[in-house]
Amino acid sequence: MPYRTGKETLLSRLGIEEMNPASALGDGSWRAGVGGFASIDPALGEPLAMVQRALPDDLEVLIANASRSFRHWREVPAPVRGLLVRDLADALRRQKDDLGTLIALETGKIKAEADGEVQEMIDIADFAVGLSRRLEGSVLASERRQHRMIEQWHPLGPVAVITAFNFPAAVWAWNAMIAAVCGNPVIWKPSPKAPLTAIAVQRIVDEVAAQHAATGIFSLILSDEHWPVQQLATDGRVPLVSFTGSSAVGRLIAPLVAARFGRCLLECSGNNALIVDASADLDIALPAIVFGAVGTAGQRCTTTRRLIVHRQRWDETIERLIQAYRQLRIGDPLDPQTLLGPLIDEEARRAFVAAVGETQESGGKLLHGGAVLGGHGFYVQPTLMQSENTWPVVQRETFAPLLHAMPCRDIDEAIQLNNAVPQGLSSALFTLDLRHAERFLAAAGSDCGIANVNLGTSGAEVGGAFGGEKETGGGREAGSDSWKAYMRRQTSTTNWGNKLPLAQGINFSAPSTKTPAEP
Ligand code: UN1
Image (cartoon, rainbow, N blue to C red; front, side):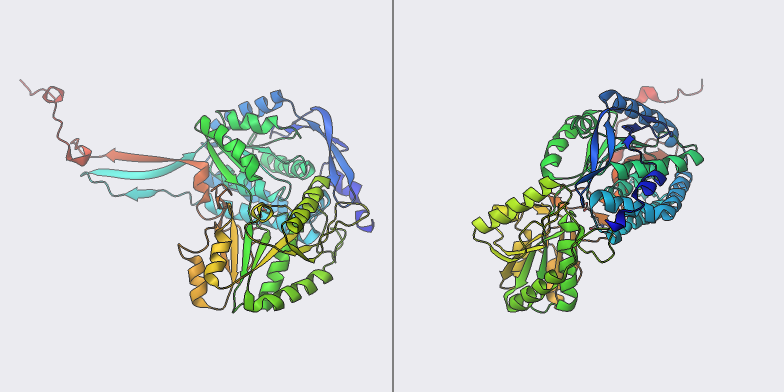
């Protein structure tokens, strides 16, 4: 493949070897593991490199290390912690092209989106630098005279960040950049489907951290086995577990963390709908639908999976969409002309085939695509089906470019359909009707964590809080005040007077505690 010439030099520039070590302590040192698992280039179905498997003892060392580093890092002033993150943002700017290419190679997402992912890392790092000077608390009104009541935020401790293959770097950055300025070490457990991106990021981080004498703040554990997640979920030294992945796995992790009174930040499955209202401007709705449904080969948690179209606009929308789908360039993710790359692996392709089959068995109509592509790699056609919202296959998240379209009568039915799934991440409405837009955004409107008007379901900026309700898990990451999840809140009242008034006006005088009168 022409775009893969120079692959070896790119990998070695990023510090990737043929066989890579299993864990990084965050002080520049790496530990070997046992055996190995392959990172596969999904466009070719061939291994890019191998990674050793960590052992439980490696994770024990990482957690002990992070706990030790925490005792130092929590006392570094937050704006000074921000300086490390600032330099990290600059290092990422310098490496954006290389890192973007590696992400495209390893995940199969197109180069433009892979570069966008690195940009997202830079954006959240910039956000975190600003935040490092604004970790503010409140001054509250005390009911007692000469009392001052404040609320302040303290670092929490080591944070486990468990990430998925589809955003193998940006989701770590959302968590790690914020956690670090908040004063927490981060232990990263990336998806075994994208370990090389994690290794490359760790090498960049190691270099910057060394310049700031910040050791043990960012560490990494690599494995294709389940035990590291289990161990992180159950270890009381890890007060926060941030997990991005399926609701099925989130459902297993959350009770383990809760059982030890730890905190979980869940960013699980989405089943996002885009509504085309009667008044929608299709010139902007159509590109939003195509990017939402086909971008990242339908493997974003924010991917548009359901299309709810006002019946007056049905024919026009479907026709134009099929036309757009026909013109989509499928191919090498590194070819700048490509808009649709491969799925991550054969298992994902099987899930796609099964979902298309199940939709047809339920009575669904295939409007476009539906097939896998022959040859190398894990390619499928962008697929549009007419489906019903209640079918189990529509109620589930299938990580593939499979869009279920369904007609609706009016905005009320559209909102009802939008909400009638177990997940609640993202939603979008295209309308020129102010009343419909407001209804969609009101309390009885979309029940999702993200509700957009005249833009699509995917492609959120980092400045807003990112996450969703119901089986999406309720967590919020990235911007706004998501940082509060990475800190502990302390309410502190100081009495600067010479009396001890009790709250609620309680009179509790104990005469014997008074200073005795002078003889
Ligand atoms: C994800 O798919 O897990 O809003 C994250 C978006 C991206 C992030 C997606 N900024 O689509």
